[in-house]
Length: 243
Image 1: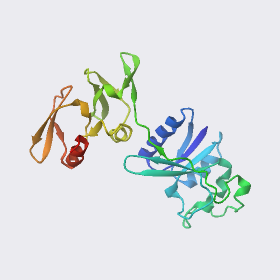
Image 2: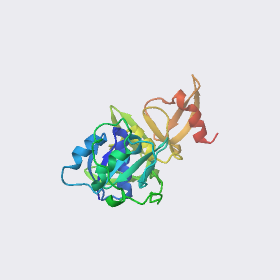
Image 3: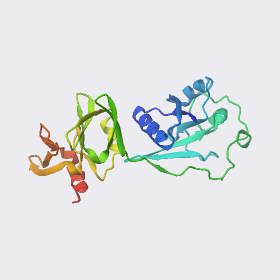
Image 4: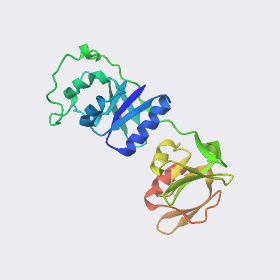
């Protein structure tokens, strides 16, 4: 299936693409555009998409007959995307805020003749919880290696690159951002203690009190710098430990 995404936020786009590929790895993202005006221009270019996913926040709040939706739940919030067939885009002006420019001159027709669902008929997709990452594919000695998250002690950033280290002290480079890792790692086992480190609960050897109402950690494998839980994360860190 070929998909066009209408979403202005780059970080959200990357998360959405990962979720779609987790649902079906054969999904092809034809294009990502920021708004409906850009979508109309892209819709005239071949190849055409099978489906268009539009962030619900870009459309009006009025209830319309389109009920097909994809709801993606992240750790802090959830996003709703309405699903349109490409041949129904000419009716999209019915769903835009009144002040939205760009396609107000499009002729309105009956939704049912364009293949929309009947009013009141619920064809919404089930809520999709973002899947928890179980393995990471990395390069090791010019070979591909799949590493289970149970083998990972901590993730860390170093000179704008992201790595993880396994309990047997192997270090691997990965193409993720720290905030992305927070959304795909199991929060029961992994916690971001500061801007640079996300640790496994099994990597904690000792916890010390530290000045400024903070904690200092000894990790396994050992780290050649002080591992301090940042002050703003202390309360959640205690909850994570089971306080």
